[in-house]
Length: 445
Image 1 (cartoon, rainbow, N blue to C red):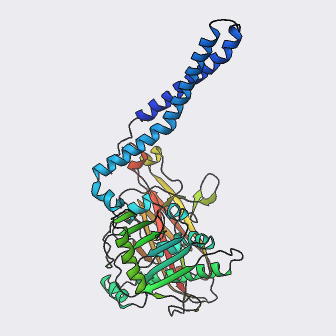
Image 2 (cartoon, rainbow, N blue to C red):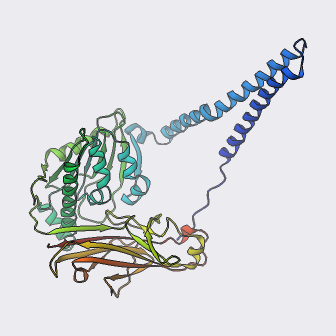
């Protein structure tokens, strides 16, 4: 892993802090001299008024200098920066392209749903294949926005579409996409009921979910699309059932830009879609129940000093790591220390969950997707799995079939994450570690 260069000293900040300090000193000296002049000189002295006027002038210079450094200079730098960006990247600025991301992982590290949705006041419109990331990690956030009066429109593929079957065949017969879509629909139905039964909130918005049958032209997130501050994040290229990373672009409203193009493409997908009837008990004709658990703040790690389990932390991703849809990389902290990077580490994590079933063998399917760095050992309800699981940078995550180990009632899955020592590490970034997983369970009550 290449060593990352350390950032150089912030000369501009160093100078600016000292200029502001000097300006404050000038102000204080002038103000003090103005006050002291009346005590040092008699009212009839010829020096009284010149000294007071000079002191007043000195204090005003200090005030103006502070104001300039704090407000005007920062504003000027921003204007210069914007002008330089338009010179360096004129085509992108002209089209309203604020930023381009090479893949979903880079997008997720740079832009958070909390930040995006928090600034939205009227409408959130999201389209994609399964929307599993939205329905798992952002479901509570969407619920809050709907209750606050925001209309949320979600568009995903129809699980009964022939296209889904075709993509399944291209993927070697694994029904991964189909299961993701059904899981999203089940989770979104639960959110729909929670919103519908939540007391109060007279000005709540709406949660509207549609499905479509064709290959999506692109995936997108559209926020306050008809407002001046409207924003769209769109994938470049359609989803074809492959693991090839697709770049994304963040587009803002710009006259003669491409914002309207992405709006039109999204509207075409919406017009050709059909609404999902969440009031129906089985809108996608399934008799099974589904549970989905993902790595994140609900994951726990074992603290050996206190012999207790504590909430895991979202950790910093290495640039080469790949994620798992709907899940977050976790560790005991957000980053290793330099000592841990050199000597390695070994930590235990766990996922506890309750399977609400009455049958002795209720599980139809239990698929565990997992990645780790460097490797991990997995134990399911006291049954240790023999294989080691790593693959942080593999194209595909490890898929572990654990249905025969899951039972009705309480279940526990342990992950023992091992990070190998790297004695020549120069910084924590030279030897990061972490764990990411998603558990999908289909069962009969």
